[in-house]
Image 1: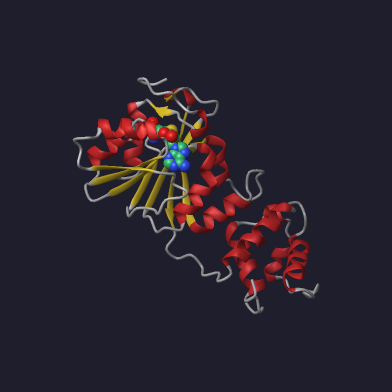
Image 2: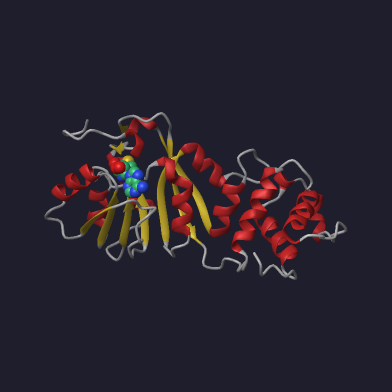
Length: 265
Ligand code: SAH
C-alpha cells in the first residue's frame, strides 16, 4: 500500500525514493528549460516532480488508473505536467525530445526498440542491472548477444551508474542501473531491416559456431542454393560468432545481402 493505493506487482511498481539519485538522473539527461520530456510509468510522480522543475514540459504516461488519479491530484496546479493514462506499448507516442524514466522492467526490450525508432535525442532509463550489462557488453563476453547488437546498431549506449535495490519502495528483488542511449542519426540503411533481425537472431542461436557456416545455412534458407564457397571479407567468417563485433556483423550482413534479390522478404 502507498497512501491508500494498493500496489500492483504485475505493473512493476517500485518507486524511486532517493533524492540524490533522482537528481543524478536529471543531470545525466542534461535537462534544460528547452526540453519536453516523456516519462514512461510515472507511478507516484517521484521523478515527475524534479523533471518538471528542470524542463519546459513533462508528458507522463501511466497505465494504472488508480495512480493516474493520484498523479492528476498531485499535479492539478502544475501546467507543465501533462498526464496521459495508457499503455506505452499501445498508445501513439506523444512528441517530446527526451525520454527520462524508471519504467517497469518486464517491458525493457520492447520499450527500447520502440523508443529507438522514434527519433528522440536522448533516452535516460533506469533498467535492471543485468539487462543494462547486456546492453554494454563487449564482443566475446557471455552477455554479448542479439539484444546488444540490435540496440547498439541503433544507438550509442552508456551504463552510467548502478543503483542498489534499497533505493526503491517497495524494495524489488533486483538491482538497477542508469543507462543513457543516444539514438544514431547515421544508421546504415539496411533496406531489409527484418532480414537483419533474422540474421542476427540466427547468428546468436549458434554463437559458438564458425560464422561462415551459420551464414551459409542462413542464406540458403532465405534465398536457396547459396554458394558454399563464399568469399570471406577479411577472413571475418573464420571467427566464431561470439567473437564478432557489432560493426563486423553489420558489414557481413551488407556484404551478403547487397547484390541479392531479396525483395520478397
Ligand atoms: N517512475 C516511478 C514509477 C516506477 S514503477 C518512480 O520511479 O517512482 C513503474 C511504473 O510504470 C508503475 O507506476 C506502473 O504502473 C507503470 N507501468 C507499468 N506498465 C506500464 C505500461 N505498459 N505503460 C505505462 N506505464 C506502465
